[in-house]
Image (cartoon, rainbow, N blue to C red; front, side, top):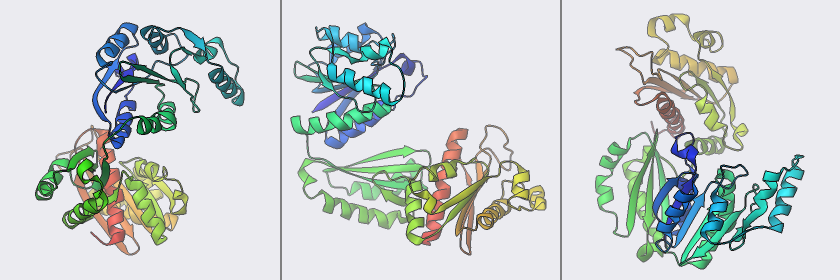
Length: 414
C-alpha cells in the first residue's frame, strides 16, 4: 500500500510553526509497512486543497490530511472536503454530545463556533476524538482512502492510535516488516558510516540500513522485509552482536530509547544517585533527566552555575583557578563536579562548562569549546570537546555527551 500526507496550514508555509505531524505519521505508517511516497504542505485555501486531492485520488491507496479543522474562520478544510466529496454538512449528535461534555468538564461555556465543530460532511465516516473537540473524518473515492485529522499533535496522535492504525491493519494487506533501532552516541554520522563500512557491506540483501542523525546522536535503523521477516529476530541478533564488537562503547540502547532514560535505568539498577552542575548547558541536562518518569528515585538536583559567583560560593570552585585557567577548563569543571556531588551528597555527578556562542570565543578557546566532567564514587573523568554549529546544537551535543560519559564511567568502559 502506498500513501501520501497532506499538511494544511499557512503557519507552516511561513515558517511560524514546524510540521512534526507528517514526520510522526510517516513513522507510524512505515512501521506497518505502508510506504509514504509524498509529503506536501498546502495553504488554508480551498483551491489548493482540492487541486492536491485531485492529484492524489486514484494514485495512492491512503491519503492522510492534518490541519484546518479548528473552530476559527481560517480553518477551511472541513467545508472544502464537504464540497469536494459533493456532500452537505450535518450535525453529528454523538460529536455534539462529546463536545458539550468536553466544555462542561472544564467549566467553560460553549460558543457558536464550538458547536459548529459537530458539523461534518454527510458522506464521511466520523472518527470520534476523545482527546479534543474536532472529529476525524474518513472518506473513500476511486480506491483511495482520505482521512482528515486535527492539526493539534496530541489530538492527531490519539485519533491515529484509536482509529486509523488499527483500521489499516484490518483492511489492507501490508508487507511483513520488522524494524530494530540501535541508539548510538559519540560518533558523527560520516565517521560512523566509515567505521561500519565492512559490517554494512555484509548485511543480507533483505536487511536495509538507515542512518538517522540528530545533534549528539545517531540512530541506526535496521529493517527486515518479507522474505526474511519470519526469522527476523534471530537474524537481527546476529547482526547486532557483530555491531557490538565494533562500537560497544557508543551503543546505549535500542528502539528509540532516550539517552536520559538509558542513564536513568542504569542508575536505578545500581542504586545510585545523581546531581548536576551546569554552566554552558544551562540546565538542559537536568531538563532531560527530569522528563523521565520516576527520576526522583535517583536524581537529586542541579546547580546552574552560570555566573562565576555561583561557581565559587555554591560549588566552592577556587577563584584562583578561574583566574589562572579560565572557567572553561579541566580544573574548574572537575571542581564543579566535586562541588555539586558534595553539596547534594550523591554517588555520581555531571558538570559542564563551555562557550556555546555565538560570541565569547577566543583563538585558544573558540566557540564550541566545552569541558565535561563526570564522577562516580572515587572515579573522576573529564574531557574537552570542540563542537560546531548553532548555540542550540552545541548545547544539545554537550548534553548528550555528558550523559553518555557518565554511563560509560559507571560501566567502566572509559
